[in-house]
Image 1: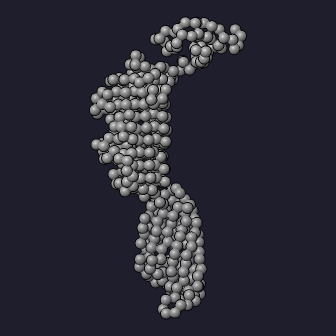
Image 2: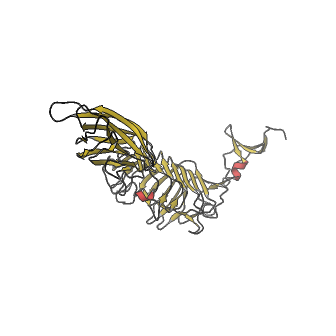
Length: 447
């Protein structure tokens, strides 16, 4: 048989029950490919693609999706399929589902007390769950989409262009390695997804939208379940309009043991169409300032501003002798510390691991000996002590009893986790003591 030669094998209508049903035309074979000619258009259908795909429709769903899943096959949803009470048991080797689009392909059920996707058992669990281009609608009372247990803790729960329509609940996912949603949507109902157990990876939901939520539900879109811990990041840039009583998520600091791993990036959060950034019910168990949070460039929800301010509220004279440096005394009051704390008066300590690049700004007024030269030094303690910035000024000889020098500026530095910084002062000229004046302040902020 010569290459690239068309051999006509049939010129009749294919039976309508066949998965290769076409209107009247000609069917050809060319180099192990089927070529259907209809209306003057040739269409190639690879025989290997047919072998790796199972077409699911309303007439065969009980035997295909309701039967033993073949993880080597792609299950193609040919239209909107009412699953009734039929459940999909995801094997340890996983399942792949695909459709035409989230308008033309779907899985629906209005049965009460129904779960669409299940594991064979808690002990056996399931593998990867991968979905593309369809929608799911599970609307019955006490029904949900998922109750899945990872078979070994290394599987993925991932979807692209999948919508959830009027779902009572999205259900429960246990101990999966990671989750990913791209271009997904939640429309109507109470589509709360509960994450349980130890997730070795993270969860990312991006370019996604939420609209038309129930105004009576109190279930969050994302919920921390039993012993939930996420060891990597939960990242989203979601555009969400919450229902009247609905939280965005109920995560807390303990669910994210690593700093800055609950990441909100460019989200838009409204409730009943109104932006309310001070709404405490949006994230009831966590704040933007918590160590686990890194919330940036959001609209309708607070943002994280890593750093803090330290202001002198009580003056205390600092004794200086022998041209040696001494810790600058005074009572400092700290405000808006985020990812920082103060283990001792006058110190600021970095608690996080990212970012590492910071700027220290300071505005000090120092009262000292007339015409004496004083040096202020910013000291970093990372297990060893080092001076990372210094500035020298001469005390002005002013009229009256107030002789001061002004120290202002900024310093850039690297702060790793648990590094701390503080100030010390040296009288270069003689042994005259000095006093930092009230309202002198310094701050640390992300560069």
